[in-house]
Image (cartoon, rainbow, N blue to C red; front, side):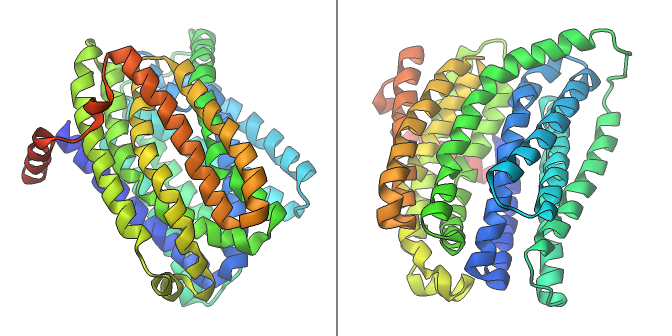
Length: 419
């Protein structure tokens, strides 16, 4: 498991660096207002993808070890088409956006949905190398085409992001079909398709509700800032959030591998000790990383992203407690998801949302993007506290089990030595 976690982390680190390049390119080339427009578009796409997960998402990983790949793919694709179409229409009714925006939203959300479905199926079959490669290719293509357009051709307009995204999602999607065809599964007609779709729907509703609520906790502040302040402020906020959340690749890399192992394990209890050990190290590394990031001088942020983005520094500082809390959150939520106990995760994210909405409503009109960062941290801490309590009740662990010790340090040294 150590080698797999390291490889996944290395890939996610590369993806995070490339994602940083995308943030930097859009910020430097489009300014705060343009970066804000891109952030709102990305958030709209992410919202559609969340509802697509109501018939797919992590449940594809959960079911694919014992179900036909193609029987899972058909209902997932059909639902994705329905959600993207209905969601695009709804976006046009709720926000004053041009028709061209809606066209790009529909097409790019659908491409992302298909790619997400395919790579989830590959990951569920433990094709982790393919999963990592496709994720890497997607963000590398996006960064590469933006670099070419912005810096090479001097084409600095928001629509450039849409065009680059078509290539970034389209090419890996085609490659993913080739990888799926290599699996031993063969299309067996419609026999068993209805039963598989019903099972997928049953698991997805419970598993994915927490993801929808978590999205609201993570991104609802963008819409509050756009409403109470302006798009430029969204751009500055998005840079601070992107930098802080990039650190989550540490705990998420470990949690992803542990989730896959837990799904396949016959003895679930045996996974508890390694889960706690890796979680402690991930939380420690997350705390160290966010501390370094929070200490970056304002002048450095302004020099890297542009003069408007120096204001992102206090955003990072106020997000820091929440970022560390989420490092523990993802471990607990992955553990409960691997056991199929989605209700606990749903209640945790509900707790977070009950904090997010009033906090955004009260803090953002007065404090702007700093208030948004405060609201996010309060939400993350509330949700994590609930999960830790439930994890302790379910496993018999106490608060001291989350504190790093000398054995963990020796384990980390061995991991680095044998990477």
